[in-house]
Image (cartoon, rainbow, N blue to C red):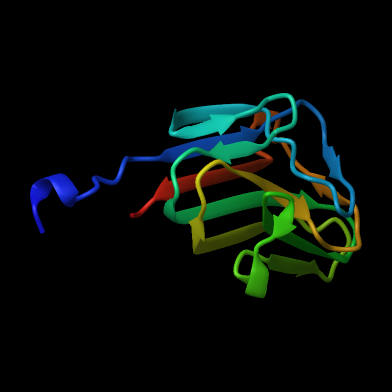
Length: 152
């Protein structure tokens, strides 16, 4: 293969987070409304609706974390691409709080192919309203975060 026929892959990555001053409620079928971001390259972030737009197609590693508090219940989240849940449960993760007022960290990760110009959202796909915690011991923390890195 000659060098001019080889298409160079462009870097793409991003980090978004959800911060606040009070507990954040996320209802069933509601997206996490990320409101801050770190480094972004070939990933566009909209503060208006908290979504990401992936500008380069490729295989991406996605990791997300949520700090969930509240009554005993089950919390389930998944990644949506272009308003559709990623198929085959590749990005769907959940936790169960068996004790009231238990605070648990839900972590999900996956490697998936994302087409160019796809929108991405993290959504509560469970049946319960979740309480995300942006403050512990009077110190501001990330109630939720998501990172995405293009692998190829």
